[in-house]
Structure formats: C-alpha cells, structure tokens
Image 1 (cartoon, helix red, strand yellow):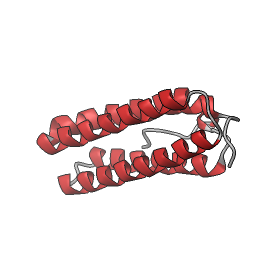
Image 2 (tube, one colour):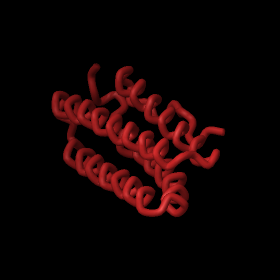
Image 3 (tube, helix red, strand yellow):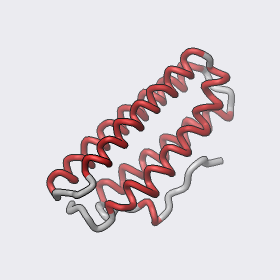
Image 4 (cartoon, one colour):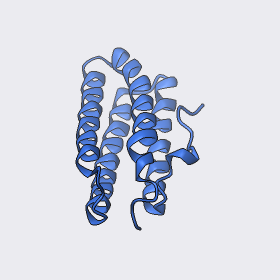
Length: 131
C-alpha cells in the first residue's frame, strides 16, 4: 500500500523537478512499506539517509532555479526548505532513539510534510520557473 500518490497539483511544470518529486514520493512509499512490514532498524535508517540526501539535492536544484528566475517568493520558499530539513532530521533522530515511537512519527510526518509542501510552496512555482 502506498502512503502518497502523485497528483497533477504537485506539478511545478518543470520536468526535472517533477521527476524528482515523483522520486521522493517513491522513496517515502518505500520507507512506509518497510515500516508496515516490521523492518530492521538499519534498513529504515538507510532509507531515511537516502531520503534526506535526495531532498537536500532537490532543494538545491529548486533554489537555483528560483534564483535564476528571480522568483518573488524565493526567501520564504528557501526558509520552508530549511524548516523541512530540520523536521526530517528530527524524525531521523526520533527513530534512532526509539524505533517504535519513531516509526509512528515517520509514517505521519513524512506524509504530512511532503503533501503540505507540494500543495503549497511548490504549487505556487507552477509556470514561474524555466527548465
């Protein structure tokens, strides 16, 4: 079972960014499936590391394109990226400290985080950036 599904409303209209959004959804769904099947903690931590790395690289691409396009909401979007990276780090720390409680927080936090960011900040990018 998937936690997140791609929605057209998540599209920013830049193919490379939309592809990365789909990849992030796949990573989140992968970790969700692992959590549902009572995985080894090392597997989950490895997936979390991959998610964090992918998100960091994606944010760097988004921010570069926003700067290049003189995007008016650049600073607010960048600040949200920083907040979201902090939240992912917190989820990672929570899981490392207590896998049961951390797993519960992960399932809810990752879903809320991505769906919220895609449907607000990233949705406003649609048509604003060039490829």
